[in-house]
Length: 329
Image (cartoon, rainbow, N blue to C red; front, side):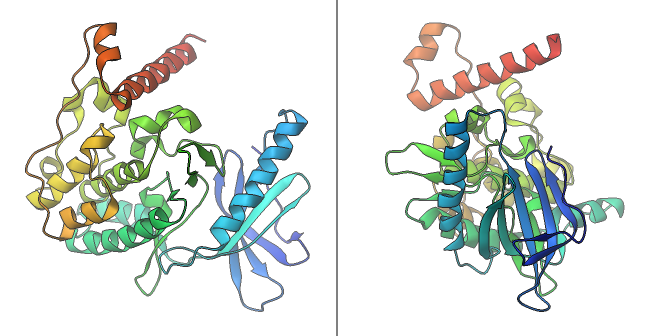
């Protein structure tokens, strides 16, 4: 992990570092004072690329960061922090965006759990409606933008009650040829990551990947229990406990919508955010729990399945092989 900046350091003769407000494998997120606009504070996201990369790849990664920072800077939505600047210095890239005050939903959920209670379903659905607005906006861009790291810790509630989807660290831009490029390498947070995203950039992710993470996030917020990881559901479908067994106050409608979104098969989830929103608060009501994964019994069975299903199997197999290799070291 890169050495963090010190309090008081000034970047680009403009941003004075106050403190670290978040950390990751490729850098930190800092609260900073904007010295040109008195009284304004901002969040500065730091990215340090792998220095072991060959020079041409390192140059390509930095150019890609700048191209896609321009895309993010054009976004303008009330439920997204505004990206106001980006720059590179001393081998690191920086993205400057609005600082969002308030608690994140993970903190609010943990506080409810400490008091042996649950977040109100009505309140969670109000937040979900705002999150759906933000994601619909991202998915409508040309080309579409996929967030890929929706989770309670990336959802903040401002003092006025406005939800903000923060941290653009894993945003993926879908190119017209269906190939994808990533602003920052990563696969998201395992608890909320769909199976197709386990392949990193080689996995086929689309708007339905955000829908899975959206559903898994609601599962956690309403039950106080983390969702079972997708690879465990893949191996043991019965390990995903229905939400109402953990919180009997959840309505059957909300439970059905969450389980629909958390289906392992992308084609069996809601196909867009608006459909999922309607399942939560509108007039669509999926009648059944997502179908379980049927495990092929031979290589011929795998080959004969639809390509997306086959890719899911390949991704899961590679993830399991990687885990075994790690354990044997």
